[in-house]
Image (cartoon, rainbow, N blue to C red):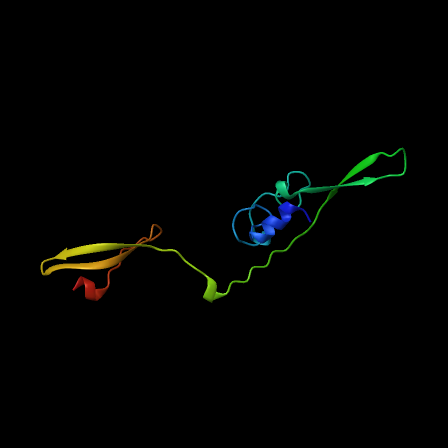
Length: 116
């Protein structure tokens, strides 16, 4: 196995698109442009074989099928959230709270105790 395959495996990259940590079977990336195999073209390997006739070399494409399995332990998963300190002002004074910034959210929520 080449250093490229080893690096992709070590970094838990998808063999088809070399991006996310998803499985190759669910990847929508394009197949290898060289052999149409289920791997990225940068991972394509060729094997050279020698024939007895006149010492000529013949190049044969090697298609290797790989399956990536990812197991995540909930205790070791980390999520990074954007949390900022905010000071809220109202008729009865002010209050310092932490706000969660979520660019994907479609609603704004506030704790009932903070609102009152």
